Image 1: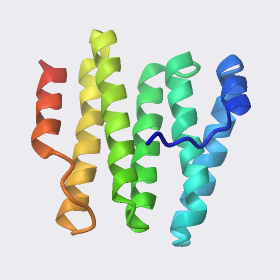
Image 2 (image 1 turned 60 degrees about the vertical axis):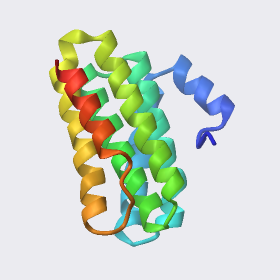
Image 3 (image 1 turned 120 degrees about the vertical axis):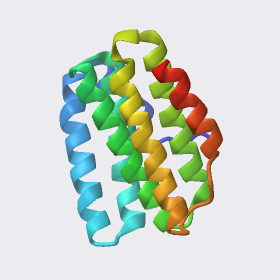
Length: 155
């Protein structure tokens, strides 16, 4: 299953005009955060999903500094995982988690100068999932695999 939140034409527009992606991300993230604060998880999903996908576009197009793009991408993924978790959508949590881990790992391979920075965001995702595990909301996504990813990226 491949989660999609942006429609094809909107994705193309944001890719071609990445400066628009910044506002799109901000609107989606802020609205999603507000709805999460109101415990309106289902209503938050499309906004958070758009923010997550838009953050990936910003990462790809380099419309913002790489460190900022890694941060926006990681926190967008975390909030989207939280909303899915609150609704009991374990498969979707796993999908977003692994999409984010794979993308950041790929970035680390392509940009060795950013490995330390990226490792911090991978660690954030790992701790985020560990916290979910400890509160009983979420099954383990493969802690051993994640530790392996972190060791690989840092070394």
